[in-house]
Image (cartoon, rainbow, N blue to C red; front, side, top):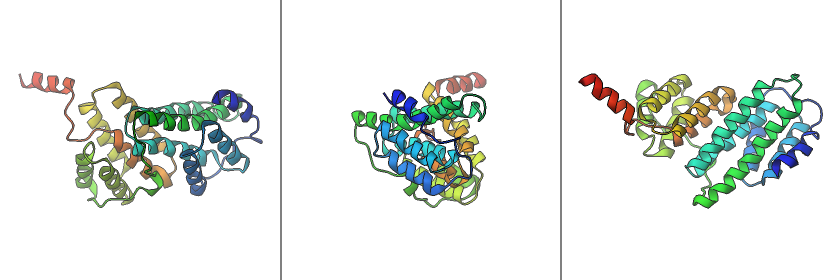
Length: 248
């Protein structure tokens, strides 16, 4: 149903998709709309924004943030798939560059992304309580800088998700390198990941970090800890067998 709606809606975007700098207020407005609107209303909001010349970057920032915010509201497979679906649709959008002759498809990818997020949100209700945590209200939790702070964060990952997210936000806001955080996350996935979703989710979020505006990157990466692996998780079977073989 959203696809049929969006096929009609795509032609209502006036002119080319707007370029330009990201606007945090517009991004925040989209995230807030996606918390309550229906699937068809979501794409209506995006079209209205484009017709007001809100930039593509502002809209895609909002889609990324709204997706990962669902993890704050209910950890689990549905919120995880909201993130990986957004990753896939945004990747496809970037491959079809402006002027490539696929403008309608590019528009539909963005509109479908917007429509899918309320559908994921509504599906979460069938799996239990959905909280009201907001990514733009995530507060820093004091931690150390450098490697000591990074160790502190990953000690909390998997045990106290909101504290780990707050420490991540504080650590990044202090000017620590996001790449160091991402490298540590990947090492822990290799050591402790035990199903395809660990690899799928981490691949999505850790590459999406680079495609989000600097104003929102830290919040996005902080929220990702809700589905990453921490130092206290058990090593996966392959790592255990490899270590046993090296000792023999």
